[in-house]
Length: 130
Image 1 (cartoon, one colour):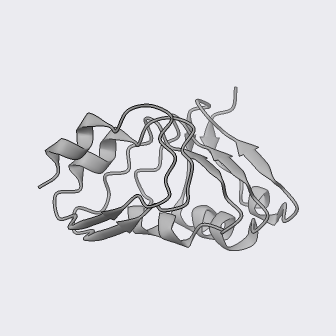
Image 2: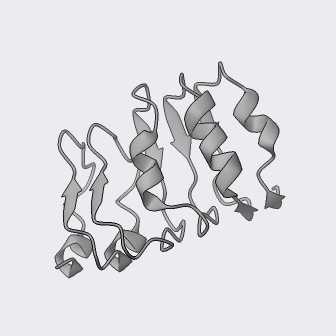
């Protein structure tokens, strides 16, 4: 297990196709997240379950690489942006259910799940969005 901050150097692994940092008591800082999103363009699988993403704006998820096919954000604390109105998660296959923290986005008006492969039933948390 690892703990602390995710090192900046991870974002320099430009040929990386799979990254699993799940449940390692890690904090993703905004700059490192931006570099991961910008530089890891071949990434197909990103597993961040249980990672502290409280400083990450949920709308930054829309900038993820088109090559990404699996994104897992279970228990990631994506609550930072209560003013987020649009979140596009289309074409992304989550390896688990949608993160429960999406239900805390009270200003969310549009959640695009088009072409989203649900491996289970549609999450009940969507019913708490107004």
